[in-house]
Image 1: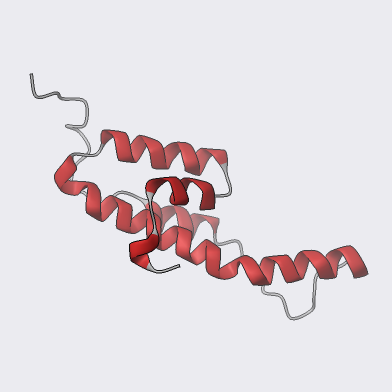
Image 2 (image 1 turned 60 degrees about the horizontal axis):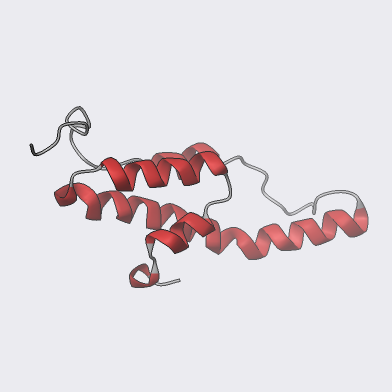
Length: 102
């Protein structure tokens, strides 16, 4: 999916875990407007990585269902931490998130 095709809703649907979906919504709601593009770019990058891995994941699932084991050529490195790191907000400080404009 092209970068410009992502919406907050599509990002939310693309994330496989409820914790990451909740973090996305929290980031969108609590990030200052001027920092929001960078935060959304991080989430779009993470979602794109997940989407690009989907065919390999589905093939591995099918192989596992048929043969009872993962394919020999499958790299089984857990990249969850990498994806979450890439989705982290790119702003300098998050200490001022709770301050209003009143």
